[in-house]
Length: 414
Ligand SMILES: [Zn+2]
Image 1 (tube, rainbow, N blue to C red):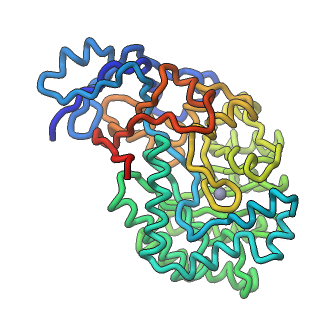
Image 2 (cartoon, rainbow, N blue to C red):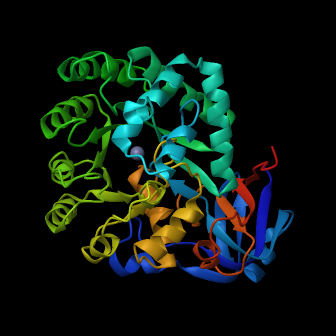
């Protein structure tokens, strides 16, 4: 494979630093190189430095001239629901007109409408729509996403969704990290205890034996899966070798953060209602919080998680889109950075750290992606601006110039 020399980034935002997730003040240190460049060999970063240095070593390398634009590592989106059929436009309209979640669900909207459409869709149709979603992520500068199942809620339909993710990995440049979220909701035609048994006795063993997921997730919330049921499902998942992520404390301070700490989950996600005790529990167990301001915004709420308290407590905060049709229909990490700065009082630098290197560690890929350092995959994006702080500042429109995965340009035109 040929070598590639990237030259003349106004800011090469490397995020080089300790080989672990960043905490406290470390989240503000992006290790920026002005007029920076990289030499890439066989899809991996070989040398990082000033453009002058890189040029000296470039020899016959193909040159990419960043032309004084910003270069960042590809965003790592650690919480998405990428694979589903249809949309929830009718719910969106009803919410705009002031209806509540309960009213919308009673009018056959809500998650159940997405489950029905996803069950009806065949594997090819589901793949075609998921491929479109994957293109949206790439166009926003994201090169790795975690993706959850959870709109099937039967053995076959959950497997169908996870197989679509496997196919995305084979056919698209976007890397997809699969998570099994069978415990997303309780199907209308089953009792809770029967569905928990189905997840534990049938779904989890199939998914583990076919290696269709790396993580198991659960919607731990009053009215969905309680603390006892969550403990049961996640303990079974852990025994089968799956790592844990959890949806917790989104609607109420329900004890989810504490359960995540008890089970040594990799991440606890949402945390809108988590209090100081919950934050302390996450810290003592080394659980990474994944904050999802897009869903707070899109639901028209103002109850954002306590990002500043979490950073001050030394938690390795992660930001993600929560891309899904009901509560967070966005694939745009720059939009999430804007919300993090304006609504959660994070700095632009903390936002970039939370959506790259910290997110990569939360997916078990911190040694491979998330920063621009020798030995890592050459996944990076060039943005049409000179200062990385322009990404959250100019909000609501794409500033992506080009995106590279393993040193290869991604075709953003399709
Ligand atoms: Zn979610």
